[in-house]
Length: 439
Image (tube, rainbow, N blue to C red):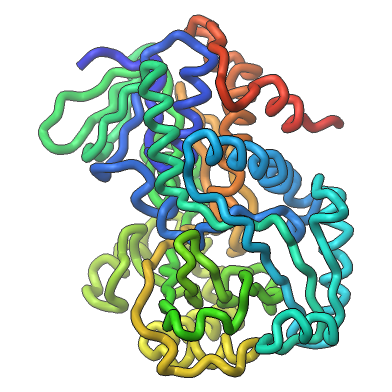
């Protein structure tokens, strides 16, 4: 097989975005390797479908994600218009369920402005005003992020793939990576399905739920492990779709585990759903089933480094939460009860069918803590992106440009011929300047 100058492992929204920017900046043979038969088949499609504005991201602690989300909102808006794809600014209410959480909302308003949102895009609402706007929602106060947007990330990624292909990117779909080994100045990427190995000069790991496995196979990020949580949704009867007109999220009860609080979500097609929960599963493609079979669980628990998982398991709160989340998968009543805290009019008969489940794969550090930010790990002739979780799809185009810019600064792309190509919708210079950090 012909050598790749850069192999991108993972055809989700991040991998496709990285390949797009590489092709936009260089003349090179760029190959994207994707296990599934189409791009964006996992987390990139199986999420809430929301472009999140960065009001809830700490401007310093989450500065890369916050900046990428802020910049990418405008990128996606222009791109969706160019491609005639769905872009519905439905808005999101972030609500405080208790008086003790109201201060968090005030902080969010400050963070929103610091993260680049315009003052008119964020609105603070007291309990009385919220009751006027959303009579069915119970809360102690709220903010309205007016420009949170419902999109189809799968369609956006497919369009970006087509643009990347037009610039020469080759997508190998339906092909998994078995192993990667260094051969002098090149890498040998062993592929499944009896295909010949792909020689490559450089590899960028954007493998989502399998990113840690890929990094481990190349001998890096050995201090980290990961876990997998399936998030499940319920579709709401269309006859009660007006119980809430916008997305409704609540201030997280557990700041380290914000994905444990279910939401009321307005999809791009107008459908309403509630979810997700966070059911522990042994692998990144376990969209059905719980405990059985046992063998994958044993393999996952014994996967090194084991001490990370042991230290996490010693956290009583985490164990209690994990047990409750598994119960919510067995009973829609548990999910309903949690949503009824802010939407008491919602009833069991309004939950008509299961929605699309997705899997989140947070990284666990040596202290037994779940990492919040993306982790960038250099390897042999490679660079790996781990823990690229929410709001990952939101920030993908700006974050991918940031990564390509970093690789160029590291001189990892010196083997490529630089040849910037004019872009119809996005401007590389403006994006990378916006993603620069001083100090």
